[in-house]
Length: 275
Ligand code: NDP
Image (cartoon, rainbow, N blue to C red):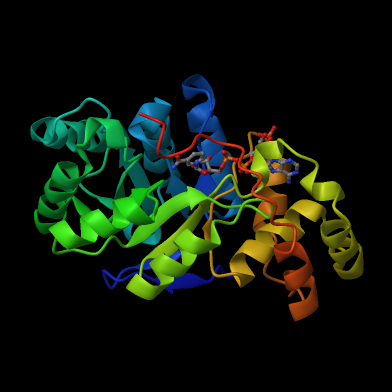
């Protein structure tokens, strides 16, 4: 299976489909990420706050996969953390991951009440210059946060990792990012299983038409919408299912019907109030 790549504004290529490890138990992470790598995933999305970077690192080391075939993202938690404590944070992540650089390093949430994200971004710009990460980006940034960041800095974020699934697509944030050359990474691509997405007629009908599962249709919809995605599963058979999405293509009408499921159905926290 050939997974498409997207070229980021940093010039680096990112596999459009990866594997996320939010809420993956640290004690199980090595086994789960090993299963994901065996299923063919080469892009792993973790974060310091997930507490499972060590397990990701052990799975990478054990796999023997050449470093340049992997794309590893982690994220910095800036809440109540001044930017002068920022370098120890990336150094700790690198040590846990067993890497001397990550491919992408993100500010996890803007946490506007703490008013630290511009300062934190300047630290990330330095990490990229120092080779600790190949690309830098943000997560959960809304348009006002991005406008402020762009005004105050030299490097445009390579990505904005935001909640996106059919019931909640943030079209305004997506349009702003597209205009600025910021790629969209869609977190909770399957809606975290928090609403009956797979039973929606637009999804179920497309699944039947293509002989695929509803989950595969939703992952495929993300790819055709240009999102970078990394669905999470603890189960090897679902990892394989979510990865097996390159042998069919949704029609323009099927993509439009799934896109029409938008109903402001956020399942996660709101970036303005999450501090
Ligand atoms: P997802 O939308 O990927 O949903 C995961 C849920 O879907 C799990 O309960 C999983 O269950 C289930 N699932 C997975 N595959 C299938 C399938 N084929 N059929 C049926 N159910 C399935 O949610 P996430 O929140 O995990 O989002 C993906 C990734 O995005 C995260 O792992 C993380 O890397 C990132 N993320 C980033 C955030 C941020 O603030 N930047 C916030 C949240 C997520 P099971 O495990 O039992 O298979």
